[in-house]
Image (cartoon, rainbow, N blue to C red; front, side, top):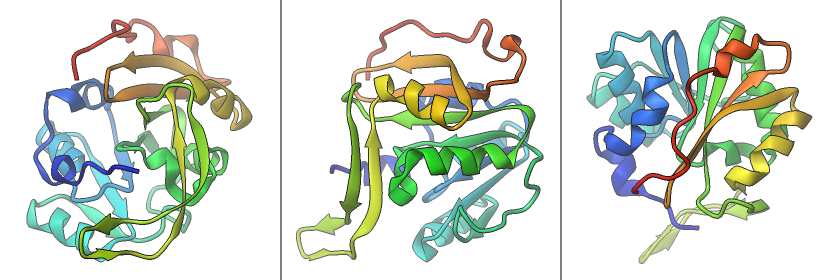
Length: 200
């Protein structure tokens, strides 16, 4: 798989806007990487915490002043059941290789009426589960469980996790979905659908 390492290390940009605008309260970013989204939300005055298992990613977060926890997203986290939003950007719905289990975990972090914001892969019908590793021209890392989920596959995965899709954003290279718990008020997703297509 191709990973956008340069984008992760840069500041949040225009193509992150759809996701950032939907974070209107306390937000936890699972697999936050170098922390560009955490930094952007902090600048908006949103209470936010990044979580990542990579010591290097955590170091980058701290350098940009982004609040971060070095840890496993499946381990106990601060303020469980109190977050307004859980972010799974940059394909992080693939963490652990089992998207349904991850979505259920994310749901346990949410306050009533909260939502999960997911970035999916550009191949909209794709659903792949297996093992991946990071690689550059000189070395390759260890294998880890991972999944790749296209936008069209999210609805069924969400349903199995007790969630529903309330909004989507379809782009050429980046796609997003907002998920809410099945028993949440329909107003959670009202008025936030974006046009079907965007540049980028």
